[in-house]
Length: 120
Image (cartoon, rainbow, N blue to C red; front, side, top):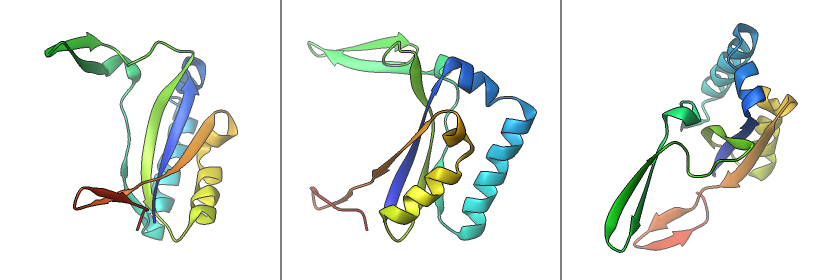
């Protein structure tokens, strides 16, 4: 089953994650996912690089920055393919950000002929 690991961080936590030791821990985590053969993809740049698009009254509106201004934001994500939720939770607990932020685990639906089904 495929799961998203969604990393939510404050600006302070995000800045700490840019320090060399934290970046090395993040790299080691990604390498462990790759070695286990479960990494499907992931990653995000900083929220300051975001552009948000919405359509109102048929007109596209573009705004610099993330969708919402909040104290915490989506700082990164990873998609993993593991046997079950318990395995996904184990990997989420190993994520370096789990020690100071939150890692949300969410199953990914598979769309077949226009119908959403559970992850496969």
